[in-house]
Image (cartoon, rainbow, N blue to C red):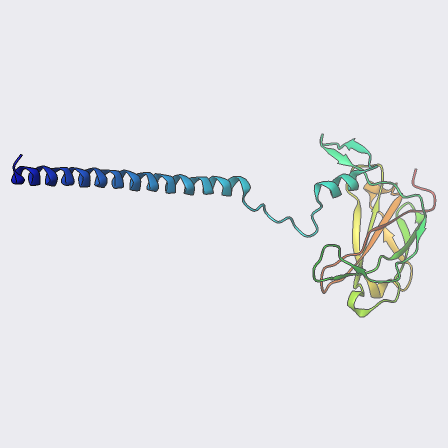
Amino acid sequence: MSRSVRRATTLATALTALALAACGSGEDAENQTDASQISERSTETRGDADGALPVPPVSGPSADETRKLLQGRKRVRTPGGGVAYLPVKPRRTSAPPSRSCAVIRDDPGRSLRPPSPGLSARRLDAARIEVRVVLASVDDRCRPDYVRLTIDVNDDPLPPSSTTVKVTKLERPLVIPVPERIRNADVIRASSQMSSTGASSDTVSVLITGERAG
């Protein structure tokens, strides 16, 4: 074979190798693009499946807390066909006030809650209840401004009747009218509230003394 033929053959072989390399590079690039796209889609799928869940409200209970809240409660059917869980009926007829501020659970800022009020109530007649609310003297940081009072027929799934009263009006016994629909109210509940932060105390529940309406 002459020198010129060998050069031509070598040049052709080199060009063929370069062409194959170019094809291979293009194929690899395409595969990398596909892999990148697949990776992105996988990430999006993981984002949908494992992305951050919405943060629940501060006052919203967890599943475990909900089970604890419902523990001991009676399950009944409402007139509309729904399901309601009745509150646990209290046994006491009076409750003493809390004597100190309380720290809001799981709050990194260590915010304070007002103390629970002392509570007792007696029936004056079928349409009126006399309520006594006692608030302990506490630090200004958790001093409540209002007390929310709720009267209820404990074993009735119908809504109770609530009213919010300024603390300044609680120096004397308070007379609350009883709506016709809950004339047989046997329980009263109370919680103190702070207008500055919206924080509320634990709810206190007691039985209303005195003979109920017939």
